[in-house]
Amino acid sequence: MRIFLVLICSLALACVAGAQQEEKGKKKEHKKGAQAGQVSPQPGGKPTGAGKPTGAGKPTGVGKPAEVGKPTGAGKPTEVGKAAGKGKPAGAGKPTEVGKAAEKGKPAGAGKPVTTGAAAGKKYQAKQLTLPNKPKPEVAPAVKFQQNRRIEGSQNWQGSNYTVFRNYRSEWHDRNWWGSHFNRVVFVLGGWYYWNAGWWYPAWGYDPGAYYPYDGPIYGYNDLPPDQVIANAQAALQQQGYYRGEVDGLLGPLTRAAVADYQRDHGLYITSAIDRPTLSSLGLV
Image (cartoon, rainbow, N blue to C red; front, side, top):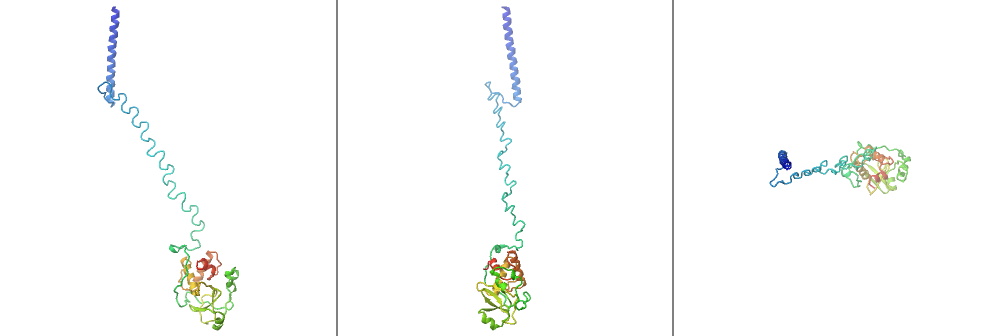
């Protein structure tokens, strides 16, 4: 019996000691929790969310902070790898004729004077022009008459457009002869010209003192006299940058050189004269 009481007392002491030990442990945890910023337990023995502070273990977005590793728009930034225009500036991929620069090997206007403004790419329209009423031998010297003179190189110009050049021979006749053979003879800028089958020719001898800056056929159209035909050709060549002289209706050296340059650049026979293919290319006929 005595032994039994001793055992009960020992057990009771052990329980009391354990309870005290447990209380001490709880006080220590309470102190540590307060120091660690844990919420103090509320009256009632079970603090709100004790052991599980708001979001404890899963703070807002913990493990998945606001797109960590993926900033706003990450994963699909504006065309990643294709940043706005990156590697492709405005129009990249299809730059103006990339790989086809304006006539590579043939710079723009190579062999052809460059035209600008409204004149570029437009055909000249023939019109009646105001011209000086006297010759200018200082600009377009008079040529000398040579009986039966032929046009040099004309034997190589093939086709019906050049027949008159191949057949041309300089002739000298008086006024009566020209008047009896041709019903249209006009006077322009110091010389007399007769009309025959669509062409104007110098009427050598009609007036022995007449002035001619060119000896050969001049193609006619729209019932224009020879000086107006020449002047319109000058204006058209001037518009395209070939002729830089005065529009005077005289087929002198400067005008003939401009005509030759134009013909060369456009694949025509270089006649240095006002022929149909040249006027057609200029848009005049």
